[in-house]
Amino acid sequence: MTNEYIQEQSTPAPLDRRAFLERTIYTLMSLIAGAVSITSALYLLRPPKNQSRSDWADAGDLRDFKPGVPKQITFERNHTDGWRAFAGKDSVWVVKNPDDSVTAFVPSCTHLGCAYAWQARRGAFVCPCHGSVFSQTGQVITGPAPRPLDRYQIEQTGSRLRIGPILKSS
Amino acid sequence: MNTLVQQTIGWVDNRTGLRTAIRKFFLEDVPASTGWPQVFGSVALFLLLNQALTGILLAFNYSPGPGDAYSSLTYIIHQVAAGHLMRGLHHWGSTLMIIVVACHMLQVFVYGAYKKPREVTWALGVVLLLITLGFGLTGYLLPWDNKAYWGTVVTTQITQQVPFAGAYISTLIGAANGVGALTFARFYALHTLVLPALMIFTVAAHLTLVRRHGVAPAAPDDQHKRPFYPHQLFHDVVAIFIAFLALFLAAALIDVPLERMADPTDTTYVPRPEWYFLFLFQSLKFFHGPFEVVGSVGLPTVAILAMLAIPFIDRGRMRKLTERTAAIAVAILTIAGWSSLTLAAVASTPASLTSPPPTALDSKLVAKGAVLYVKAGCDSCHQVNGVGGHIGPALNRVAKRRSKEWIERHFVAPGALSPGSIMPPYRFPKEDQDALVTYLFSLPD
Image 1: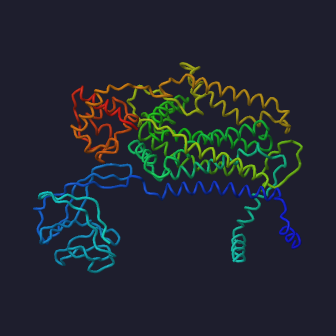
Image 2 (image 1 turned 135 degrees about the horizontal axis):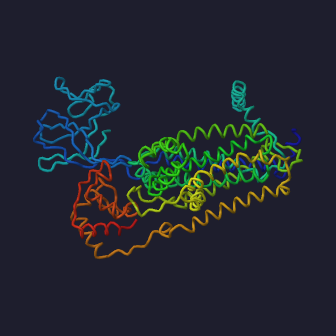
Image 3 (image 1 turned 120 degrees about the vertical axis):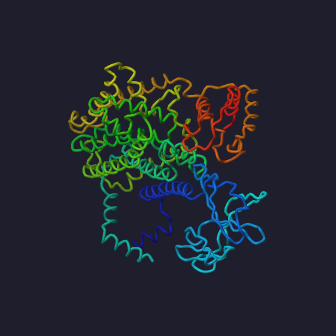
């Protein structure tokens, strides 16, 4: 056994038939597996060309809000969700600041996405799932939430409030 | 490290017998005369795995049902990375699978490999052919374009002609009241649940029997044996690779047709079945009135029974290929009959089906339509050439998908034709409507 091995090392023997068959089998199977894997990975993992999104829409009149009293409103806007394009409801927590500027919070907790609510008694947003508490400016006061509340982009035209896409907090 | 790997493999083999089973499978002896003619079964199995994988991946981005199927399929083709390729692999894979299965059966037939003791292996092969055709028939509906809809209308009408059982079959496949949501659900369930389960069990049984009786020797007096690995596996893998290469190129280069979305009111549509069913379609033309059922149900049934009966009719001992003149003659006659029926069907296909008629559009109307398009505010919801709102669908390919009549009816009652649409109804004067439709049809793809 050892002698044969040494001989092969010194003068490389021509590829014998069996080794050729085996090499061809493994090479061709690897090529197929590679092509299939790359195609499948692209298909599954690469984001689609047009992302799902929600369009800008009118959400209400700013005169309906009182400074320091957050209010949840629902409004209708157009969504693109995969292959579906439809008009549907959306919800937002609107806070009117003392200087009359407005903040629009995305109505889901930054911890695990539960819907939170304003508790006037505590003067804070409280998430019922795992007890995260946020201030009126969206900062985390206590609880497991890793970051402040997310906001929507907003536009004010006259007294009308328009809501745009989400701005993730960092 | 190596010893750890070997120890792990040894442990798994000791507890499960996995390595021993795999070795036994690959090292089993096959007749030394086995070679290229015997590769088709393995290629068919490979193509089946390809159909399973690409089918599952397509289902990840597909919404079955008349409402969403078409739009989710266009989403796969235009939005999803490699989606166009994935659909191509599934579509051309099914075509290639039919071809390879036919080659496999032809090889077994001309070599007489169905003879004692392999009658049941052959019968299971016939069942596998029927399951494969069943996949083709049910999958045909799923794109929900005009071709899918009208083709399925014809096939479901044929099932109603089956004596005694027709009405029951029709109810079972959800087509008692025409092709619709119920038919779609049944076909989808058959295609993705019932047929795959049947296929897995039948393939397993077929392979078990192939192993039980061994591969039939190509020459009857061939007593020499050699292991399946690597000699025959080499042939199989090379054939599989060629098939895969052909399939991949076809999927990448040849567009799978997608016609307008299914339109049950489109009276101009002339349906044609998939190419491998064209011979049945053509043979129907020879039977009229009360004899129609002979062509649509009788002949296919006789053909299936005849295939099952072959091993019991031809019971002689194994012979050399050169001595099997009768079998070769039958094979050639069958192929010739199939080909001539298929060619006749292709020849009788009206030209409008193979290429859409060129239409000259009135440029003045187009211009008028373009002005109206902006005036009526269409662009606030729809996109043309990438510009406009996103609420409604982009309109560039609308002429490919819809008829003039459909668009005109859609203006007046959008919700009735596109359930869930928020487009308000528009009642344009006749000449304005003509201009708008002409403009839409003038848009480039």
